[in-house]
Amino acid sequence: MATKTAVTPLTGFDYMTFDVVGTLIDFEAAITEALAKIAQAEGVDVDAEAVLTIYRNARYEANAGRFPDDLGRCYARIAAVFGLPDTPEYRQSMIDAVGEAKPFADSAEALKRLGRHYKLIAMTNAQRWAFEKYEAKLGRPFWAGFTTDDTGTEKPDPAYFVQVFEFIEKAGGIKDRILHTAQSQHHDIGISRRLGMTNVWIERRHAQAGYGGTIEPKEYTEPDYHFHALIDLARAADDAFDA
Image (cartoon, rainbow, N blue to C red; front, side, top):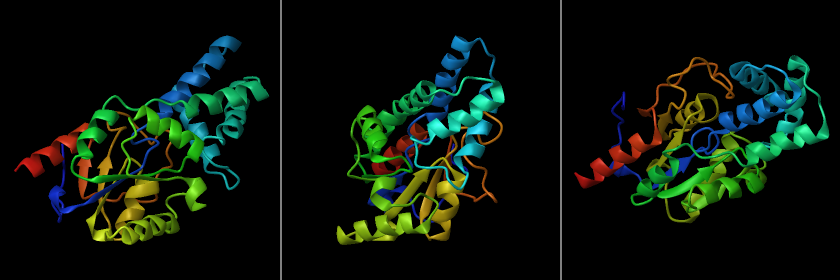
């Protein structure tokens, strides 16, 4: 359910920008399922939430590298903790698994419905090779897509958002007509608020404790809109435009 009435109604936007990994694509399941296969093959027990914590800490080291190629280096950290072999084959299997991560069950349908009302723009911290796989699984709903290969930086760097603003302005739009949608408080909700955007928090982990594979924010940002699933946002948009 929405927990806050935004200043601008859902009918007041022309563009909807999206975080992809974690909001539309279930990368946590891809990580834990791939690691579970390795662990089973090696006869080792692992805890899924512990795996995500180790991944999160490794992912945000200074020399992290770009997602999902960084899964190879992150696997080495996970392997060291659980006593798993750190081999090139296992590193690559983690990269491949996350590159093939699946959408959340509601993502494709929600994007199809939202695309009736807005021009959809992807803003992902993934590399383009992975984004192209994700976009295909989502039904290719995006009017435009930005990756770390395009921007040369990652969210929450304001420079990432500025490049998107400039793109939309060249197309004849304005920042105030963009609604930013994401699950990460750290990467998206906080910075979008500081940049003056209206935002939607899709709290994918609402039934789970902690932040999983996503870095914990320094402070919580109250979103303009708050839903537990993307399909709930799509339904709200349909209702708003129908009214």
